[in-house]
Image (cartoon, rainbow, N blue to C red; front, top):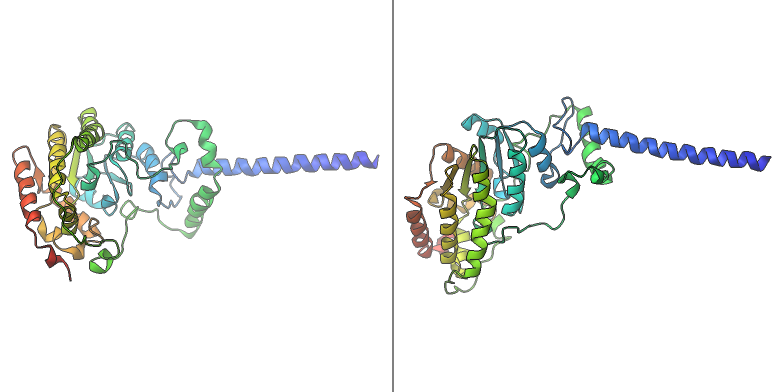
Length: 356
């Protein structure tokens, strides 16, 4: 009889433990779905303080579930844009969804989600990286993505709702922030960065090549990368959404970037690739293309750069002001003059003057 009682107790303990574990999992599931710290199911809830911090976990949800009529995107060159300034200058209600280290395909895929979200998107502001032109159209800077946040498969959402890292870094932090009365992360703050500038910062990542190599010719393999990259990721996208204006600009790298091309024998090739990309984009009526390579008061001032490519936040503000004023506009009539100027300027540049 005692053995029967003990077995019943063990059975009740087992079932109770199982029910308790199931209850905890259910509570966590409901909390993740209701709060939804990565915006997988819905837009932010009023009364919850959301921390926005992880682009590849949040951008897709932002594009899919927020309400907006303009968006800012691109690589890390676009992280310091302020959505509030775009709204002020363009009369928009914008979001910012950049991707550090992104290729054009990753950016294009998120733009497509945004333009299919039901929002009437008037503007897409997108910085086109010079060093992204000569890549395969499907080049990816990262090997692993949270696919469960990207697809429409509800079954793999278990990786979201019962993910220990997302629980602690997302849900719990948002709840603590809410109890502390903190504000949501703004789009001005989201993904923005501060850091070193000028030689002290640049010298940590840039080292001048000892020799100057002969200029390389543009090869067919280069052409076979540039044309599909621009066509599939930019031109076809713009043609698919003719009611949206694409404000595209070549990100204004510093003169040190052009020195690296000059010394590596790539300067002429880079300009010829830019010519191909420009010609393709200018065929789209809803693309407004800008180049700021002639804004030498910026590109020649390395105190405005963190490394040879990344400019500080003040330049993002200025870029937006240039665009709204239609400065630096590239057209079918002037693009060859801009490219010729670029070639002559950086082939004959006094690069020694940049060094302390």
